[in-house]
Length: 414
Image (tube, one colour):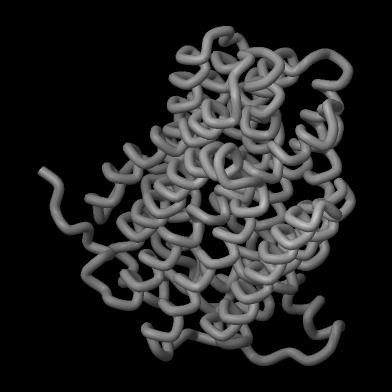
């Protein structure tokens, strides 16, 4: 029997969750629309490499600084700025499209600007969650976040096919711009949120020193480090999402509406998993479960790469999403439980390079491999490499499979 998830008993978290439920749907609609737009502008798979680079470089260069800001400034105020910036870039994409001026380089540039905002948004947002709920409720909170992300990722891509097909490409961007208002309203309504701030650092030298402290913290905690490496391996080699427009049009031969449902399929599996985790306050054997989930994610990716029917591909993507969701919830829970609040933003900022750098670099890798050897080969080889990576991480860091989830949090540094 489903009951009210523990995390939703806390009003500030509920407000943020409802805002994300709307905003993620708009963002996922735009993501699917961008990839479809690129396929409309070019029939060469290598174009996805460019958008991967546009997303990765700002994350690589700025996410650690975003982590410093999340630890030294008001996380809620940071989100006001980043959400407004992403709203503006979505509106600009719509304007360029409706006027017929849109070119591939416009998409790359505006995607890069949005990634710049995200480099500061994600450390603040992820670090804010443990300030909204008690420690023991974090698995439920991240389960609910997974539901918000993946419900939006079902509705967004599914609607994106309908919007593109019946209203026009520009409306996918404009609807996304409006959706950011949901988070902005939530931030206003929740009011001030207390947080444990680090000492304010001034200038580039102070920021670099703070980043170094965050990196040393991660390197000194094998559970956190190994989960980040595992995250990077999985997202780098599993390229099912990136190449979906090419699978849809060139392998399966389906239209934009069917493509929208293919994009949404992963999130259907993820929402099912999120519902299970949202009911739980504690999860045991977290390390073992994380490794199994990532291995299953890789296996499902291989299955998708081999699929030659629409329904076979759809089912494989549901399984991809389920494995990815279990992995995401557990990674977030493990890291937040093992990271004190004073350094949480820097941990998330550095981690952002891993878990967002992985898929963005993976887009470059997927585009190059698909260009040289074909789309199915790129997907299947990536899934196999992901499974091999799981085994290597488990051997290199035996602390991870032994991690249960009840271990004490490291103390505040003196």
